[in-house]
Length: 225
Image (cartoon, rainbow, N blue to C red; front, top):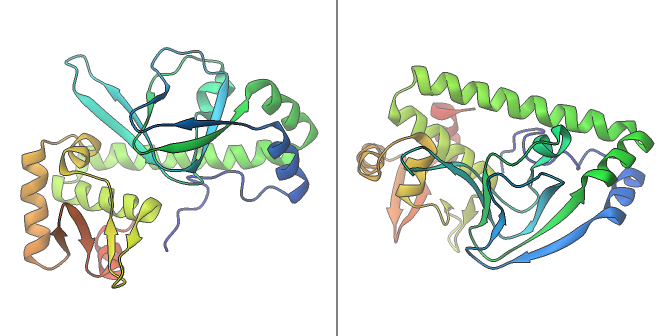
């Protein structure tokens, strides 16, 4: 499966010694689907990593419209920036499925960063990758068509959490057309029209609400990150 270096999990490149020291500091939390992990405005004293399940990161505009920043899958890390800055959360985190996450407290992060300088380097790479990702998204919002933005978003979601069925077909699970619209700033109807265009030329097909990618190599060539 395709991967985007440093974008989702900053812990993988740590030495075994550092990873073990980090693991010794972790606590764990189990969530049922629909449970809030944290809410907007909460003090950010911990960062997270998904152990299993999926966690949705989002916000609302002044009119109450939901904006989805991302879907966190197994192994994905999040919440570090506000924890390091000591700010309050500007997004919410909600269990999209039953899920389990691990928590790293700010005080343990500070202690570990002094003991293991490699941790700060790994986190710097992580932040840099996220900044580049956000910059690319901002540029796309200004310059790309909805069709292109949707293709890019589908590709990112497939990279993060695509699955294969019993026939080896790659598909995007648990992401509705409404959610895709919330990710790219479009209505569900607009997303439906663009998906029909993709279906017409054989890029995707939709079966029981799941979006199947017919040729991931060609899809990546068209919408590559």
